[in-house]
Image 1 (cartoon, rainbow, N blue to C red):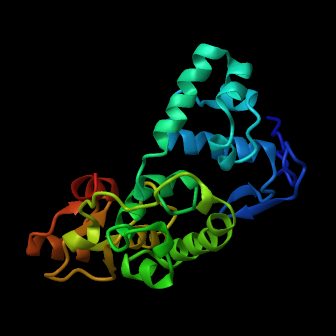
Image 2: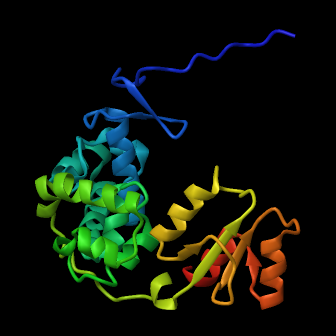
Length: 254
């Protein structure tokens, strides 16, 4: 049996920049990389539900950044994709300007800052300009989430994105994990996380309190292996639900 040796790539196939290995994944750190920019714009459009701004259209339009979405004219769009489609897309872009800050923030592709983390943050602040270390901690975001958000805020947002045509207001508040006040203990192997440390950081970034032992104050025990253990026995004796992380999130945040 012949085994094929796979060589790990060292450079980005699009811009030829050196790739960085982080948590077993390769990343291109070149902010001007065409493929990377295209994906960022695609995610932004999908999150804000800008219909018609998919990968094929993005490739046709002169878009080099998220900011370009709001500076391109109706005529420029129409000249590339036709008047009918261009008019519809332009209307969609105009409509997207009305989204609130908690919907907008996850669109910027900030690592560990998704919908839930954004909702938690904007339950504590009323405007994007209120983001700082204190507000991140107050919202219960984990250390890595805070670091990623603050790095984005003081660079991308303050340098360019602050001037986009959004109100950056929080909008209507919704319940968060913190307002529900849930405590979680995690044990055993997990389905969607490499280890319990990563799961703990993720749950804490969403606002859950993660403990190392089961007590009467514990709300959930995460045990995705389903095998008997001292923690599962104690949870059963206290009447504590034993669930997967996905089930806990569905029950509290979705």
